[in-house]
Image (cartoon, rainbow, N blue to C red; front, side):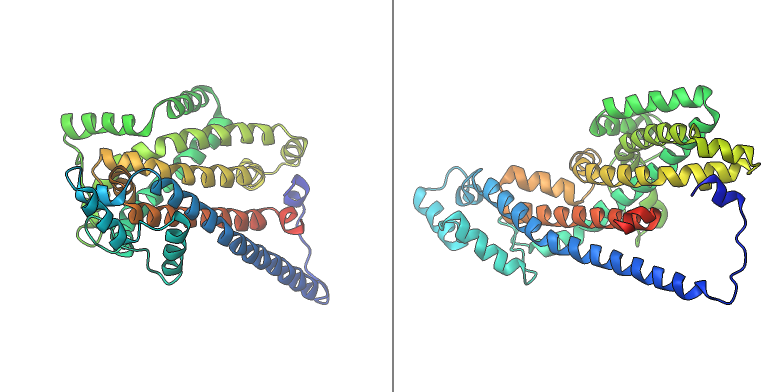
Amino acid sequence: MDANSLAVRHRPLLGGARVPLRAHAVAIARSRVLRGVVRRLLLAVPLLIVVSSLSFALVSATGDPGRTVLGAGATPQQVAAVDHQLGFDQPVYTQYWHWLGHAVHGDLGASLFTQEPVTQTLSERFPVTLSLILGSILVTVVIGVFLGVYSAVRGGVLGRFADVLSLAGFALPSFWVGAMLVVLFAVKLHWLPAIGYVPFAQSPSQWLRSLVLPVTALSLAGVATLAKQTREAMLDVLANEHVRMAWANGIPPRLIYYRLALKNVSLRIVTIVSLQLVYMLTGTLFVEQVFALPGLGSIFAASAAQGDLPVVQGITVLFTVIIVLVNLVADVLYTLIDPRVRAS
């Protein structure tokens, strides 16, 4: 969108001649988006196979499952019997092929220690991690974009604050921020709970209170990154020639800031948000442990330390699927925001 398109009013269509052409263009754009989605989904299949096979091989090489289950006091005969019972005495590629055949049908195996199906573990803990990530993304987008746009428009102290916040977000790890938040708001002020999670169905208000501190800790880096990137991109756009033409044409500032400048910045915002969401997936490994949240991150860390291969493998595949879906949504948003992406 440029200054001329904002300044010139569209005339009514005569004879409806352009309506079929516009409908045809919309149909072509939709078909291109659909083909892009299908292509991405097809490419995701070999990606899932590669990631799952590598993670399977790496986790299998970290230890002996039979020894892990029975403990250090077990005899070699007992360990061999358990390995044979669980199928871990076979070559790694045979174990992986057996796991993949069951995974295609929705069976990700069972925990080596609790014997609980991995799918059940994922279904019970995924809502916790999903609440944490969605809350962090919401905070990142709302506060990050607001700070970036406002500091670019107003400048001054708020612009310097955005720079300081970005430095702090980059320098301070999320688990340290979480620990400091617990000390301040839970231990000293007693405003919020230090640890634990309350399901939304049980108490919406307590659910929200249990997420305030972990969401703050997880979203700080995202807010800082998005605010800085949005501010720099807005400053670049506002310095362009077509923006100066918009001012000269008497277009209201609100239209210039939010329909002209922000729309040109939106592609960068989508890119930063998608990258931050991937970062947040890894951040849950630490934040959930700090706040004792029963999510996928905490169980992944515990299972990796114990050598619980089926649980680690199931969570790895689920995280990979989430990353693929995030990239897919980002690509779709690119095509909706910028027509040049659809044309390419």
